[in-house]
Length: 331
Image (cartoon, rainbow, N blue to C red; front, top):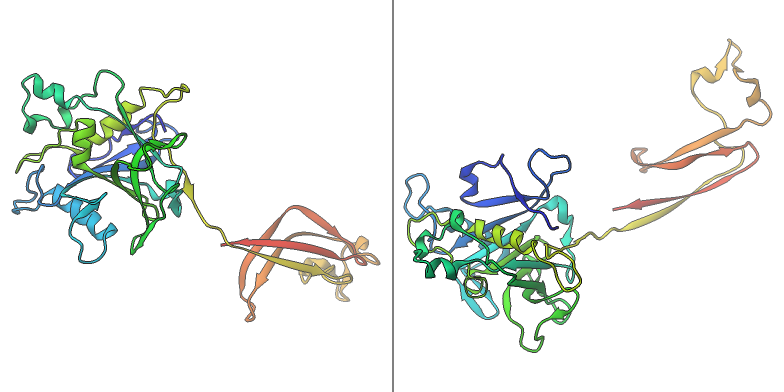
C-alpha cells in the first residue's frame, strides 16, 4: 500500500482517539478502510479531558483499551524489548483486510523521519508540535520495521502469538540480528501493532506531545510518517509503503457422492406427468430417461439441508449410467 488517505466522513470527535486510513480518497470507487492509527498514554497526557471529567482523556482511553486487548490480566504497562513505556503508537488493521490473522514474516512498516528537531531549532515549542504542525524531514530518512518471526519463536499469551517489531526489511531480514533494535510488538491474531512512542521520538523525531491538558493530535504524526515514507523508494526502485499479507486457515472435508444407475432419473414435480393415468408428459423420458445434475444437497440424519454444492456445469446422467461426484466443503 503506497497511498494513504484520511476520511472526510470521520468526525473530529473520533479523530481525537484515532484516524481511519483508506487506500484512496473518500467517495472514490474502491475506497476501503485499511487500518487505523492511534496514540495512547498511560496517565492520559497529550490530550484534553472529555466531557468535563478529570483524567478522562482520549490518550488514556486508547492506552487502556489496548492494554485490555493485548496484555495479560493484571499487567498495567507495555514492555517492549525489556523497556516499559507509558506511551504507545498503534496500528490496528481492519478485520476485513486481515481476515483471521496477519501473516508473520510478511509485514513491513516504513516510517519517514519527521522534522521535530528542526521545529525546535526554529524556535518551536514541543507542546505546539501537534499533528497540524507536523512536517516530514526534507530528505529520505526512513525507519524500516518488520517482525522477528524469522529468527524468534512467538510468545504465546491470551492475545495469541506475539512477535517483536524490529528494524529490518522483508527482503534483507533483521538488521543486526544478534542485537536487534526493538520498536514494538505484533499481535498477529488481533491485527494490532503496538510501537514504543519513546523509541519513535528518538529514531523518527516524532517529538510526541505529552503535556497535561494539551490536545497533541499525536496519532496524526504516525499517519504523516507512514504516508511520508511512501514518497521514497528502496534500492530496487520500489515505493516504501505499508506491506502486509493476511492469513486464514481453511479446513476442508471431501465427500464422494455416488449416483447409481436407475436412480434419480425421475422427479416428483407434478408437471412431469399428465392425465389421470399418470403418463409421462415428455415421450423422451420413456425407455432411457436422462437428467442433468446441477447441484448436490448435504442433509443431516434428521433430513435438514446443511449445505449445497453447485457443479460448474451440468452433468448428464442417463438411466443406465452412474455418476461419481466429489464435493469439497471448506470451513
